[in-house]
Image (cartoon, rainbow, N blue to C red):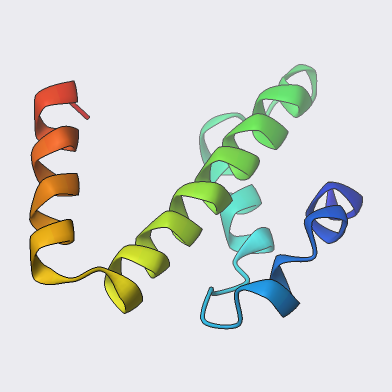
Length: 79
């Protein structure tokens, strides 16, 4: 799992993004703790980490108009 994250090398490319890899994994483990769900935990952690980076980008770099457009898209999508 950590190799997947290090392959992206986002720590150096997106210095503003929080490194929440372990936290994201533990979120998946909280709901899918049985051994047979190890793949699910990994997928949940990967998706949560990527959403976290999107959130950090949104918070740090979006203009008010861009933020409103993204918010509108997400609301229409039903997320």
